[in-house]
Length: 472
Ligand code: BYC
Image (cartoon, rainbow, N blue to C red):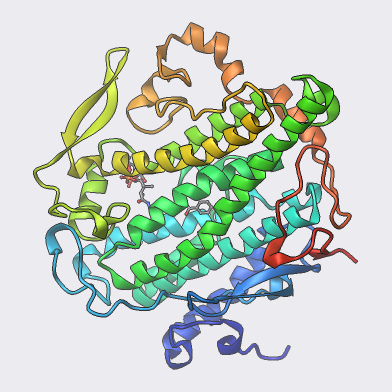
């Protein structure tokens, strides 16, 4: 077999050619990554040409190149956002010190854990989505799925770069372990709950991109504030890609909502299932599920871990540097929703330990904005129905609400009420079976499955009938 030119093969702005030690580590890891991609990446399309964007630089005016690529030949690159000259640690005990180009020895373990937790989500999502290609609603959607998948692969590369470049042998072992855990596996599961759930159909996929990738946005934005400069720069560039994933989620759900509304108008009925659509109450139940799973990803409301990450200068708040306060948070408080018997109340907690909840608040406000846009679609069809986010206490497995049952409108309910009502609140087996029955591939260029409206515009301004994936 011809030798692979890794310097050519791995586009990068980290001087890979001059860092022989790192290059060797990545040369060793890359075939294992490809083996994992082959076994756990998109099923059935590895040999097809897909119209993908590839990151080739970090230039804000044009970092992406579009073209047909077979996924295993995708050029997974390593990019850090341009360094900010004279950057400082902007929060915590080291506030005002120069940002760290290397890992501070005393924080090595904590930092490694954060990077591994972030890195673990990336291959997990590819595993969760690997079978979806076979039931794509259009070539446009198929291409978007694969774009998301290859970029999650690139985000894994980004974290592996940090581990290999800055954590020596431990880092290399963690890089291998990232390829060994498996989403949903009983013996070697992925680290965080949401990444062990199934993504059985395309409605779930869009919900995942909307809700779970948005957790990615908020976690990456907090890590982008890190005093460890390579992590900050890596996350800043990852955020530019993350935006497309959330776009796929928001417009995907939006197009399903739109199609439901069109069918409701056309057939003068709420029962769009008869006409091959996905009804709004089912969409609401999927929202309830995916939002609650994603809310768990922020950790406990009151967390000493979060306080430590902040005090150490490793993980900041969303838009930390824009906030006008002391950036140490030793004295302030923050209102946290919690339980008081069977009532949900707001309680002032020390600001430092409340950082997970604060980030969750930023996230919920962002989630609501997209839901408002879906509701505009419903309203524009003259339909009286409002999609809502479930209460933050609904169906939680992590934090203060994990012990109780909370309704989507925020009441602590009895086991009996939960048992009687949860089928109204969460996707049922019938919902899953019905949505599953719609999952038949539509691969004619420009055509859409019955349950989803066409996108407003093509990728990279391509026309509607563009052949995003060449199947022959
Ligand atoms: N599932 O004080 P606590 C993305 C653990 S998504 C399972 O409550 P902490 C993406 C926790 O690890 C973004 N375990 O929470 C999206 C801890 O364990 P240890 C991913 C959980 O530590 C779509 C214990 O419970 N990035 O990029 O303050 C596609 C008590 O912890 C969960 C990150 O998450 C859970 N949901 O915060 C592709 C950023 N929640 O240490 C990609 C890095 C908590 O006692 N991670 N636990 O053994 C972090 O910042 C923090 O680890 C967390 C948890 C925010 C996740």
